[in-house]
Image (cartoon, rainbow over all chains, first blue to last red; front, side):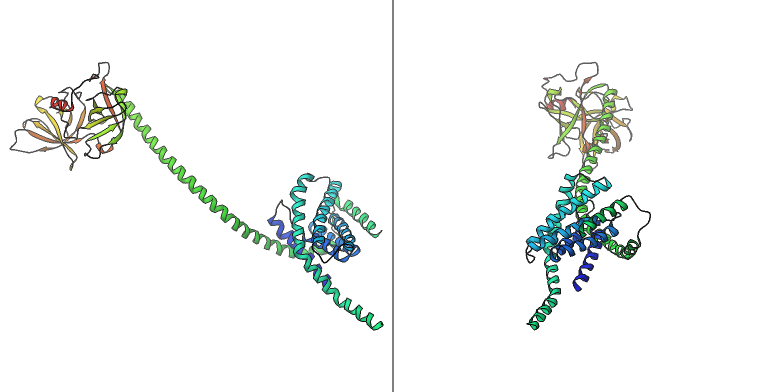
Length: 177
Length: 288
């Protein structure tokens, strides 16, 4: 429960910092997306179902608070949360390399999904080559940096919040024997 | 399956809300109502941080700009001084040109390029030599009056001996009077008063302070009628057989920058032919 409260606060704080502080500093430049880092990292830790749910809720929150069209961020982040959850089963969660690379690739995927959705539903957009070199790649690198900083904290927080439950299960299992 | 439903739902949502909506849903209203004050607070903090960041960044930029502007300013100050100097010169040259046009003499303008520091304003060097047609013992004047005489000539420069120099004596007369007794010799210079001393006038001659002294033309070196100065004082020496007067020079010898060399009279032959081998001493003696 504490874990979910903390990550909810982290999402809210990320939304406020990204939307109201970073956007002032980095006009027309790539802005690190802590929101996306949280979705991918949590999907990686929590699995595809909870990853997709977190992506959906976080994306909808982002759509409502920062965007005017509902569904863009929600769809992109749902898919990202689900995909990273699937990959999280196969990879080591206690090492930094996998989540960092996942965030790098995930950010690029996220941006391409958004680019596709915008071009399909709105019909306007910046040239893809320019966006890729000036926005997507810098953003992916920023996010990778954020992952290196914050993923270990999320990992510890998640497993420390699970420990009592694991201990309890072990104790129950022991008494049964 | 559930994911597919969510994806389709979201695509429909995008399709519906992408075309614009008149009203927000209650959930959106609620969330935006909660986030608005938080966003206000954070954006205010963000602006302050941005101002601080800009101030730090702009400080360095301003410092660099300040240095650049200072350099530019000093450059333009230099240019301004140069232009002012050119303007002065232009004005001066126009005056000189007017003087040359109105003069009865054929004049060669020259620039003073050196001054002999060992003598008190005794001689100067000009940037014209015999390649320009300058000859020894040619008279040198400005638009204000007599300066001196060419003493030595080299290809591109000449030495001028000034009338303040004791080596040079100039025959002079009072312009107002046609009396031949009112002729004298400018023979020395009082450094203290900055006056020329003119002597060998007869004591009974008619001369007053304020009279203009001009060259007499006697001796053939200096043409007649060139201004030398104004009578300032009559020296009262009752034991002397001759009278002396103190003359304030028309020319300011401390500020000589451009002069004219008299090459001849307009429409006539040159005053001094090339190859005239008269020495300076002889010239002085002749003047006297």
